[in-house]
Length: 126
Image (tube, rainbow, N blue to C red):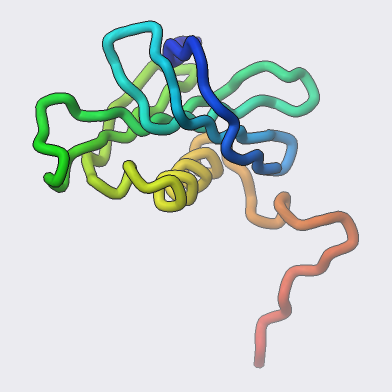
């Protein structure tokens, strides 16, 4: 699987997603020409193998205050796709939330898998 070239990064947070673990990195030093604001690296918790990366890529051609200052990049088994240009991906919380959503979509994670053992889903009101 293709992956972003990260020589150095600082761990910002860790998220349990069913059988997967997502680690959010920031202050990234890239080994290639692409500069990253954030990388969400998703690993299978049982095998510790990487299975998905979601990246906030700095758009070098845009003005910093523009609406397309960053792109989302998704590295997965079928390759790489760059989507959704937005200044939102420069914000750690907005990026994290979207990266977790993409992870759940790409890895077919059901929201019920995120519940702690013994925790019940809220019942629907009549």
